[in-house]
Image (cartoon, rainbow over all chains, first blue to last red; front, side, top):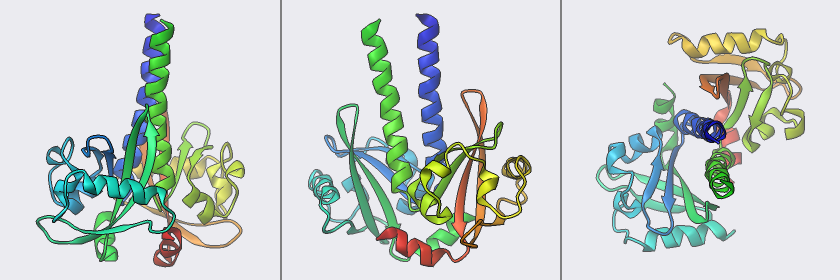
Length: 135
Length: 135
């Protein structure tokens, strides 16, 4: 039983490793958000750079806290509704602090029974940021 | 014991779900390649569109088979060496068939004791392709 648990743990780590490597090597800013709590559960380096806040101040904090004039709860509910609608697949929002504007592309999915939003953040002036991110 | 195995399987599926959702929602073309065999183990929809071959003809086939004039083995070894060098972090290569040129950005990592390459493929004329991929 011990051996089988170790093997499961290794498989789990393998999936986790692929996930982390993919997160850190995409040049796109990506956040995962719990729909239930509105809290950010994962963020990659591209998101940290774009939002201009350290990783520690993103993970476990409200997504709405990253944006100007967004209410806790409302924002995540709106993004979740938008994700399952075919009509409008992105939302424009202003980052708090540095004042940049991003398009948020939300995808809703379920993992271990909980609803999760993947949010891709694309800066309006995206070519300038992308060129930086690739170096 | 049965219950604990089920729980482990669920955790594993959760990681796998996040990985798949991230793969399919990044607009960047991504391939995972086994360094040992040179075979593609994972490919996302953006990669399928860019390489212009169905997923079934990518998974389990040689990475080198996607490119003009690349020898089996040599290409993956070169990408693996390049990934751990700080000097040159990309390789230009011509796609077989449609004749487009891409820059390959390789990242080398280890998962469950095996060396794996993540390859991001960026078309030379990347803005045109990106605009398509976002719709």
